[in-house]
Length: 397
Image 1 (cartoon, one colour):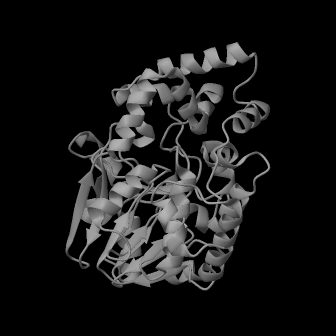
Image 2: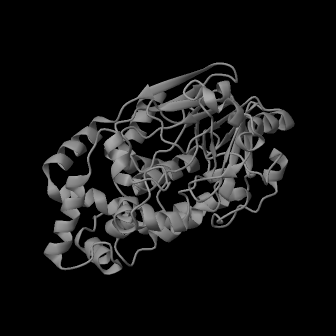
């Protein structure tokens, strides 16, 4: 196995590691993570990073604006893979950084750090494309996901999690005794922590809903439209913070046009770190630089120049548009099932992009042309396997 510093030299250049090295790295990191609690306690200063989703060049941009490890401490809130074109490069860089600087980098599990989700949203296909159909890279990395921590507490006052709160969890101590070394279940505490969302009613927009807002159900847990986890209101947050002696909650999981979003007068904040999400949403991103529990700064940024170049290529090349769509299996689901969108909810995918000023009609047309020209179902396992064999990436040896 190569030394971590040697791996970093290649990874910062966006080069892939050999499969044998990935196997060894994942084994070593599992040895390290198995000793960590479900809830890790750290101190500021630390920079909090939200969803990255395989946008590798934007991860490098984060290190440019926020500082490289070990000069800056980082807490990543999950969702490292899927949807972006470079999930392998992204997660491998974070794995090696965690191994090399274990006290400087902390990795929380997101809902996409899951075998089931990665088979539908791009990471599985990417592993196939870049390492071949006989590769076990996807297995090595998804096995590692079972070892990632669930939550983090900063300065004994700030609670950090990927998604949100759970009706099955009243205290942080209850999180500590969960058996996390498993695939994310469909329901229960782990599922809620990675899937749930805050929901705040807008009284200014709908003043007539004041009575409804203060009904008990609107303030507490409700079934999430995502199909997993819950939505939760202000009273749930206030109760959790009071019971556990926390001041605020920081989480990721939801796309924010401005890079971050504040709920309940600052009690909950969403940090989103994937600019121009899926290379076409046009949103900003941010990292949260915490200097202390009371001093912080949202460092807002836009997509990396490499992504803009990629977007130009996408607009000018049918082949590239097809390449991107192969990774976005959630888009494939939207065609076959008529639902799903970039927030894992049951919205119409076309409408999502139209609302954001983007049109996906051309992309769908290209997919249909590709299917007709090959007389095959481009979403079938056989087509994906053939695509992987044709587009295998040669990594360095």
